[in-house]
Image (cartoon, rainbow, N blue to C red; front, side):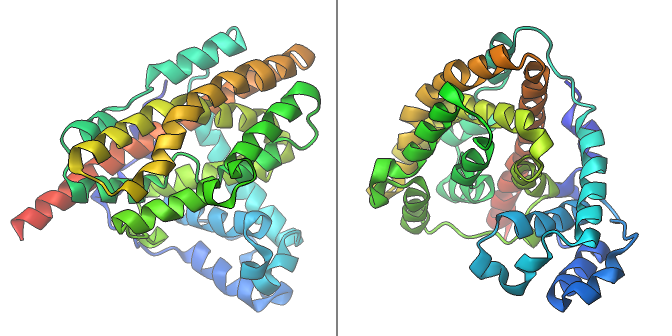
Length: 331
């Protein structure tokens, strides 16, 4: 697989995060100004990867953010200038993602192999075995949890599916919804964990570019209907890998004496995600590929993209967290 450094270029942790973002700044002003102000975006180009991904996050928000939060921006979702800019930025990003080596062969076997290849990155073993409390909290704040926005992504992924594939995604979604119990909804459990460990909310300007790209990838796939096979693969890989990683977080909680309220979010994923991953493969991907064989390579393509984005993020996030601790000790 193409190395993260090749795709990422210069490492984000070697640069200040809040750099000038001319296109994104212009976009934010234009979205608040309404249809007439969007003309300023024609032909606009990002100055770098960070400017591109922050712009894409703002554009994808028009499709995915709560309407109440968007306000008048919501009516600009299909504006021709917005659509052209979004497509142009996404096309450039996809061309870079396509440098990633995609496995070939049986879809289910290759999905399992891809999930196993980096099932527990070194940074999670470090969390479980030696990270300090501050390092753990800061890493989790950057990580964002194994399924940030996963429920909405599953809802988008099931559009147009049928039979066992649609049923499996519905079952997965209902589990995200706590099987009908509000206090078991996964986003509620995450909020409970955040409060229990006093986890900071890290503003996008303070996150590395790799973290922003990892967050934007789901929206990239979910807001483009033609990328549904890639979305099915990316979400499946997430389910296959989340369980073992969450077990490492639970071990870190045990070692460092985390409060009881911190446990449920990661504990439930440690327990159920391996089951979800297996069911996603057998009940969603397998019947879909049987019916639509051409989707197999594209499902693997989406999974490979997700794996590469994860690797790039972990390679950058771990040093950031450790360097932060070193700076704290030094001062």
